[in-house]
Length: 289
Image (cartoon, rainbow, N blue to C red):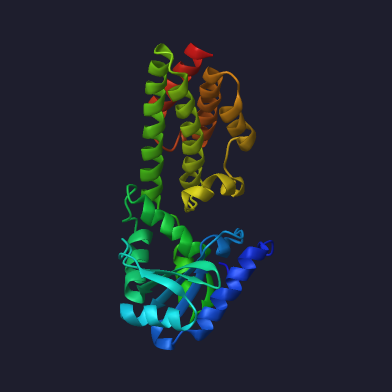
């Protein structure tokens, strides 16, 4: 559970961390008892174009006008209030010291309810956005805390078996459907769509690896970059993804993707019913290699 930035955090991440610390120090106690830096800065991956993402938790969310006025009193400009999100968080955006800021308030009760649903396996596979928000909590770096953030992170260390199964079977089903569609593109001479399908298969393999590893998925923009951290993955993952994107032969790109999918499914073949998908993909390789 992170208590500060990673050792190899970028200079931009450290700059955003310092800004978050400054905001937390200026935040009235009734506005938030728990405050954390989240997003790319918390992971130490920010660059000079990155936003500051900061979350506030309180017993009661301060009125909208008071939140806006507080941010403005500390130099924020262009402050706008967003719509309430699915996790019952209340976003406010603005610009501070030339940095785009995304501040979000959530009640501690809403946080507890959200975490309970997740840990008890009540989060559905279709609620992908909420599942991604879990990783935001797991990666959060406290800048004001009474221990609540660490307690939540400890609860989220266990990845629910029910959600894992739902996500894996959902993603495998989508991949299976692609291998039924690609031969049509070949038949029609539609190399453009065949190429798009190959690229999408690479993306879906990376996405599938997170539930296979019982790892909360980061935001989609980070899935590819962070896949190297996953202990269970096909050999030479990044080299093979490169082949999918760059082999001069369009058909070979789909074959590379098919073989990569089979190697991705191999560790879970005895655990989940993926035989039909494996059979279709093996047949695809045999026909088009």
